[in-house]
Length: 85
Image (cartoon, helix red, strand yellow):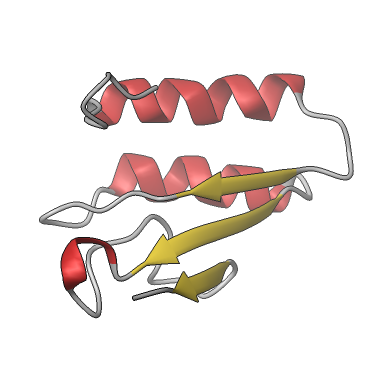
């Protein structure tokens, strides 16, 4: 989903999450290390869909040396966050 510089279009990330939702086998974990300048409802919906299917979602937080960015699903609290500095 990411290019060689670690960048991605949100639509590509969502497409990857949608692919996972159609192709996973339990037990399954989605590990995301993403950040954005603003919340994205479509990304949140894709993450919530994975959680509803039983996929464990782990989101790395603290990217860009900031304590919090807009992370997928952060407003619902159904996923795990890893704060690493």
